[in-house]
Length: 287
Ligand code: NDP
Image (cartoon, rainbow, N blue to C red; front, side, top):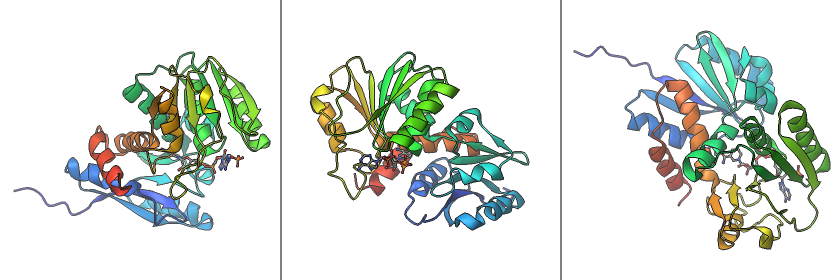
């Protein structure tokens, strides 16, 4: 006879607002595919209650980890026992895992991007010149991981000068990559010799599906790999225009799935069923 165990392991996301966060769709599909008695839930946590929510997690032994979304990715750092090295440089945590009694902060956003680059496009980041459009949380996570993986040069292109300069300074001071900043005014022309072009802005995110970053698409060449962080819809006008110029493309849905797959492995110890997770999210996004 099998011993009964009615105690599910719990993971989830703390955020506010959080009702529309779709991560649970792919994580729960993955738990089901592997026959794990785990559940992923969305927890509405306001900024003033974040520390109490994390403290509560400590008391619940079968609460195995959590994702953080707006507005908690930076504030959570002071609630944890340890921050992984890349999350420290990024200055933000999107995943917490338990290590015994300790809570460890990780950032899987940039790691998901790197896995999409390596697994889906067979790109080694060593020595590449990357241009990243945007300087917010996603741009920070991606550029730090690229730099730590050995990227040679990173050009940060951003509308707000202060935010862009801050990111370029961070990369120069805390990594070995050479970073520069270009203020984004009008149609940006991608310089020659660029290997990777990444849209890390929120331009094109549902429901504004026709919005496109202001770019001279004739400066996109067939040798470039062009990536978009927008997961919904995965096919953006930015990627379609780049593909029309012969560039290889990587969409944001893959990155989102991989960052979830990395968290899944951190929590459960099992390799994530990436294809199952991809299908679950694509169906959710109506693809
Ligand atoms: P932030 O708010 O931190 O940053 C947004 C960035 O977009 C800023 O650089 C901002 O520029 C820029 N931006 C927004 N609108 C415009 C515009 N009209 N013109 C020029 N620049 C603009 O957001 P995040 O970095 O957290 O998220 C960005 C996107 O990444 C979101 O769409 C999110 O869904 C996606 N994302 C995807 C992930 C994935 O796994 N696929 C993971 C994490 C995020 P400025 O500084 O000038 O305001």
